[in-house]
Image (cartoon, helix red, strand yellow):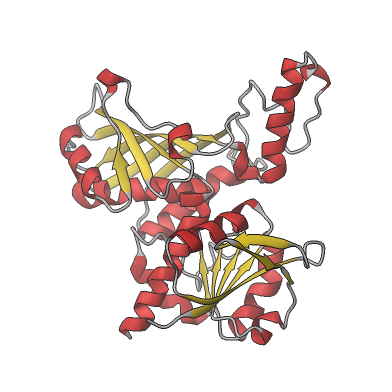
Length: 343
């Protein structure tokens, strides 16, 4: 198998570090790994494969200079807007983890377990978009059920970890908890979130729009339709919770036909990269603490609605830095390589 020159843009960030870990763990077919970041981080090092790699400064010419063939971006939308076209023009395929290109009709938005065929559109722009973290784990669970029962509506409430807002957000939670135990929580500052996050829930992720929904909630609505190529009704309420890693979601799914919980459970057990943990009698169900550093999406609390035979309820949990970002990006790259090898 051919080996590739791979750039990780935003290598000093939480997702960038996770991408490097995933690339190392799965024995990705790389010739060289080139970590990149802004001039502030250039010259620092990041760990990879038991050694330290020097971070190169992100410039418009560095992709050509390093002969990059695969560029994994996770450094913010404005960075992707400026530099992803430079990577594509230099001949690399870009997998972008920001929201900047997701709804561009010429850019495929991909979850490999759901719509791998869309990767073939990458040549239009040289860019493949990685969906929002909360969308990825949800559509992985939706796909096998939609195939079987014809999904027509999704109502989802999310319980999203602080790591979804970056390293400094995680640090804010830790600092506030330390202040709580020092009896100083009233004095503890909040900068990443509009309110105190320790011992609290905040029903706002991103800014509100005129619709009353936040941008995070509308991402779930619009991205789900694009990924699944279907006009599914989606309503989302996204909530930030005092958890470091691992997004949880409560789903109510309405189908065009009757659905059986036991059959749905079996379908999910057979689905790729899904792990069913569903034994309520033994208090066994997915939880964020059990999904950290895992590349699978966990599903449990699978049950029929009490009143309607076409409605199913379930609980979905995944490591948002992995499944919701790094792992999906790397899986896209793996699938792209597979398609190149078959061509």
